[in-house]
Amino acid sequence: MKKLPLTKQQLVAAMISLSLGSVAQAALSINNNTVSDSSARIGWGGADSLTEARNIMYSSKTNSSAIRKVDNGYGTTNLTNTNSFGSSNNSYNTTYRGSFGSSDMIPISTNSRSVVVVDAQTGESIYEKDADIARPIASITKLMTAMVVLDSGLDMREEIILDPEDFVGPKRASSRLKSGDRMNRAELLLMTLMKSENPAAKSLARNYPGGYSAFMRAMNRKAKEIGMTTAYFGDPTGLDKRNVSSPNDLVKMVRAAGEYDVIRRFSTTKSYDFFVANYSSGNRTYKANNTSSLVRAGNYPIGISKTGFINEAGRSVVMETHVNNRPAIIVILGANSSATRWGDAKNILTSLATRRTV
Picture (cartoon, rainbow, N blue to C red):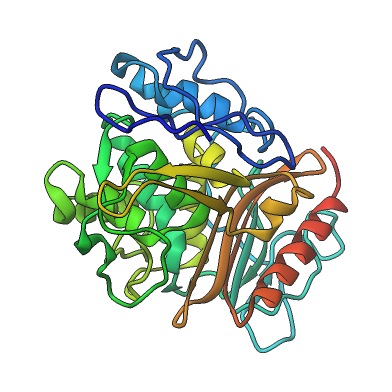
């Protein structure tokens, strides 16, 4: 990895070109390329992810709106609930959307506490299990954190120094970061979305205009703006068990996050080698992998992904996928193990693949 000093005059970009199945090898210097078409259809992960994100994030401030909007290929859809026509016989409140026997419903059984699957093309919910109950969401929170950071229009090249307070939260959590670590805002955002590093998210919030309290107000305001009626955010990391939402509201959050190309690219980055400067303890390379085993494996077309875990929340994941020419949003909350979470996710993805192509 090329080791360049991180200063405000000469910064290292967080983004590299990442080929499928490869590991990030070196950082690139920042360029000033502008985005000629901010509404180009998104890709579903892959070789161009970080290259395109870099071009968007490091464009001039006059083109900062390019960070936000993309054409996701299926337009906007009202995601209000539709009438249910059937339910399962298990102990959970499971509802299928559409007629039984229809190729539009997915006849599956899941083991996580709350699940919802939405056909993002039609807005129809095609599988539900306690989808209106608000539960702790753990690090799924970080999608909202990323949106608020990007909404601010702050310079993504600005160097940020991690402080001791960035490591203090509602509960203890492991981290490979250290007080005094120096990275630019883009690198911290990539680390937040891909590796789910809690101090990175906390530092992004602390370095927001008006400080940490203003950032938390912005998170809850953003939730209301996108129609999340059950959501509350008490911290930017998800370590706070008060961070809650229903699966149906998380569908709205995933959909809103999909309007930010950077979130799509960063949350589906498989791995990255960060160069971390620290004047006290010395510089080092931080090799990081995505927290999603599905993203790392690369066997499914995933356009957005975020995992979460605290004891109160169980194992959770949200994702957007595109199977059999149909886009879908999947929310899984409260799995009792990683095996349960990924088993439910694969079961859903397999069922989506058998649905009718339109």
